[in-house]
Figure (cartoon, rainbow, N blue to C red):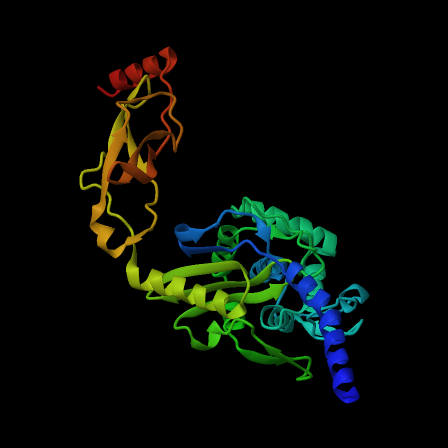
Amino acid sequence: MKKNFFVRAICLLMAVVTLPFSVYADDEKKEYTFCEVLIEASAGTVIQGVNEDTPVPVGTAAKLMTVLLAAEQVSSGKLSLDEKVKTSSFANSMQGAQIWLMTGEEITIDELFKAVIIGNANDASAVLAECTAGSAEKFTELMNEKASEIGMKNTSFTNFNGYYDNGSQISTAKDIALLCAKLSEYDFLKGYFTCWRDLVRDGQTELVNTNTLVRTYKGISGFKAGYTESSGYFAACGAERDGVSYIAVILGSDEEEYALSEAKRLMNMGFSEYTVFTPSLPEKLPVSIPVKGGMAGEVSLGYGQVRNIVLPDWAVDSVTSRIILTDYLYAPVEKGAKAGEIQFLRGDKVMFAVDIFANEPVEKITIAKALGIIIKKLLTF
């Protein structure tokens, strides 16, 4: 009897003790704003999105910009992949994911790319930042400058790795997709982004990619998947098939598996239901336009580059075009002066337009120049 009493008392005590903790845990459960987008990489066209322009914490996805800035240095020749750089005490002090670099240890740029892209290493990110910009502070400035340059309108970076950010690394699904599109322009990065496992530091440290789609998805180009407490699970994935590239970005997911499976679903939709093509120019294009008050009575015309567009398969034949052209230009005419545009439409909606412009300059005629022309003609008569 006493035994049963003590058993019941202990059970009741455990229930009372654990109840507040379980309630607290539920109350403290982090809620994220779910965002996703699918874009076609060459033009950045948004095919499908949910909260794609909503700024949210992105945490360690900031490393994608770190990789881009370092890749530019390699592409320009300022850094080389086999170059060795030393680890600073600052880089050695990094916490979280790391490859355990020691102060003064030398490591190649090649291994740093592996460590950041495959292993998400914060210490390697610090070394890349310092050897690229001289200091972490300067590197952060460059991150925000580059974000603005490539059209990441709703992005603000506060450090190079997204680890010590307290939710302050802000971006959007669309902005991250644009960043991935820029990364895809550097062919040498694909080997890093699509690697599943590798070793660095003379085999002392093994790296495993958290983007599991690199093992299974046809045509995968990369890019990154991960988690931080402030941002939830994210996946930024791209793939190319038959010269067509799609990029899917998922932010603020509660589950790692869902973030990756949703990215896969979006890319599948792009490849199976959409067509990327370059619309044709109108058959009869004006080759010149009159010039009033010029040394020449007309000027030849040039045309801007027609970009790719992406549409559902069934809508490909719905694109039309029309020419909007002024009657003449007034001298002086500068080379490149706009004379009109070719509009590409779907129904009544203009999808985009390319400029029609003067191929060469035309000087304004003056009395002196006119007399000179007359005299020249008289002398050659």
